[in-house]
Image 1 (cartoon, helix red, strand yellow):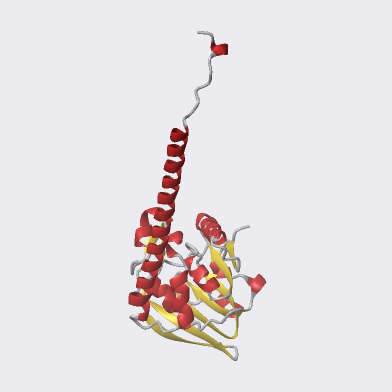
Image 2 (tube, rainbow, N blue to C red; image 1 turned 90 degrees about the vertical axis):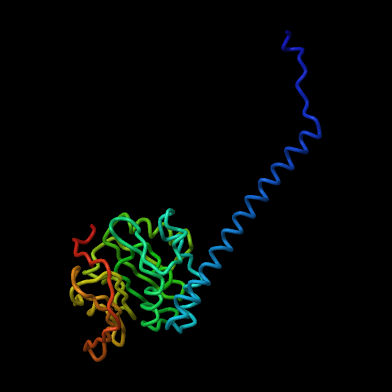
Length: 251
């Protein structure tokens, strides 16, 4: 056969039209599926807020709204995303967990935060608590001792445009002196006693919420107040948090 004289096969208008219709159908189905998933996440968050928070004792409208808006499923491994809005902590790797949604809301509400406040968080973990604080309009400085978790949290927070959060890979027992003093401090891992450096970096009139207790001991979530250079505290509830790790600061 003389290939030079062979005429190219012409696609019929009907075939082209069918291909175009099929492509549009696939795009429509993909778009509908994505939209359905997004609506499902919204419904799950609304149910979480209604049953786990408003149905208990969370009363702050701003905290409830932040919990309704921040997409927790982005902060957990993919295999756990369908459980993201359940009333439970979830593993995030490196023997760490993301706290149950109620605990995040409860600790946040205790601080009585206002937009523009400067917050120190010890224990970035997944970055979810930092995102909730950022959604409230706070400037968040968060410290994570595990480099892999710190890197992952930075990535997710940036993807979700929480630009008012800075994450430091380092030792929470040293605090973050560069940005001190802080209006409030939130600690999401349990030391055996309140680190003095965190007290020093807390602003006069500031508050701190922190779990206290050893790994094999009963831990208590405490509310700490700094007034006239003096510290007072009250126990809020028994809790179970991962231990606060004392590691050399990152260079």
